Length: 143
Ligand SMILES: [Zn+2]
Image (cartoon, rainbow, N blue to C red; front, side, top):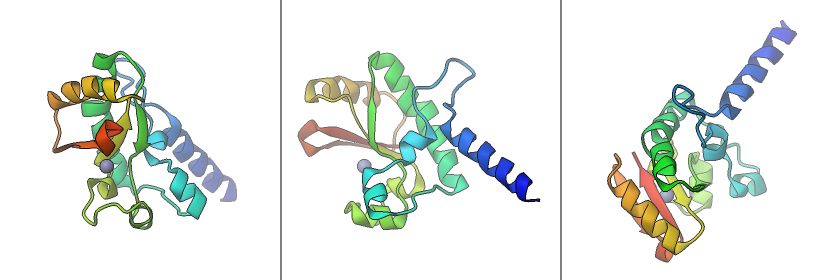
């Protein structure tokens, strides 16, 4: 019974690490990338997403992040994706943030000029929120 549990855990870890959107081409984004947080690591916060948040992150990747990446033709870095309540509090996120549901990501091309181009691309893609943040240092997008 113990070995079964270990296998199940390994499969889950693999699933989280595997890029999605494999129907067309390999996606540039992973659930792991949308879940990882330097702050969570530093404060020892368990930011493991519940299954419904994983579903939302997949939608965000498939409908927004990956199409934006393809149109941009350059890497997009995810600064923050899913946040559990403790992490959201730690980073000073708003109480009803879409990050809590796995529906939002803070992303950047690495430059304000690049983010301007990314903004114009995101503007035409499906979204519920699109916010120019930190003077253009990053963009908050939610689906
Ligand atoms: Zn955000």
